[in-house]
Image 1 (cartoon, protein in one colour):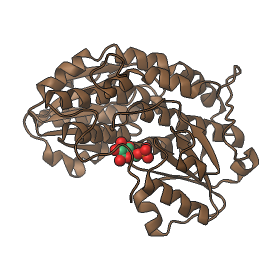
Image 2: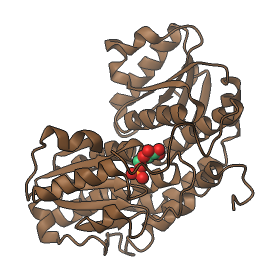
Image 3: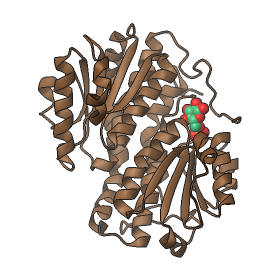
Length: 369
Ligand code: BG6
């Protein structure tokens, strides 16, 4: 049932192009606009929304962090993202004009469920983004957008995460479309790029052998740091989470701009630091700033592992290891940038003799608070 792979996780990583394509299927019409039949919140209600709040746990929370960039950019609706376990205990400000998005692979995570119940009690509309048909979270929500990743068995989430991102982009684009936005042209371009993205994910998967080889050389390390900016920041958090879950290593993700406010004190000789580099096109100021960060940490002895777009030559002199990803629109980059980090963590776990599919102390679905 592992389809010839040693672990479910490897199988699920490999299934990502299909999972992404399946989640897009039937949701973009030939003219390039979005159809979301399962969203049973009417366009007129969506036009009344004045705030979006995303609640989720673990990897799904990271998808939510990325969604915030897309939702605020394309719709200009303020968006908060909160760990579901923190949400209801702080008396969050919610009303009928708030749209709460609950993201959950299993649809059974108790923290997320309690957060959405709290939101509904305040009169807010809840949209679930979920991978499991008929599970509790979508049943208790006003609307659901299912991710079509298929069953995910490995505890560490991979294909479900990529499809959560796709679903979040669809929601953001759809909100932009029903509300009208000055980014109309950009939305059309992104829809076009999104419908091609599974091919790019496939391309990344074909180039992962050097990432695996690199991971094996780091098996004896204790710490790996991850840096990113903009949507690359949650990608860094996700890369670090994967390494904690699977390799039981101390791994932390930082916003690269925060480096000088603390984390740079951690840099020492031969410390592996993974840096997710934004596109040199698009928000190029951020690209240049992160290249300076790479220079700074390398000057202090870090071993730099740089994930950068094809054609980005500026990073080459400062990368001890260079992992190439295809060029994508800035906001979509997490769909390709996360994949090498999944492979990296999986291979490190294997090299350290860990149980990849069933990491110690973790469960696939946590149905207690
Ligand atoms: C954790 C799992 O307990 O729950 C993570 O180990 C997962 O992998 C998180 O991301 C959230 O789960 P779900 O099913 O709500 O997406």
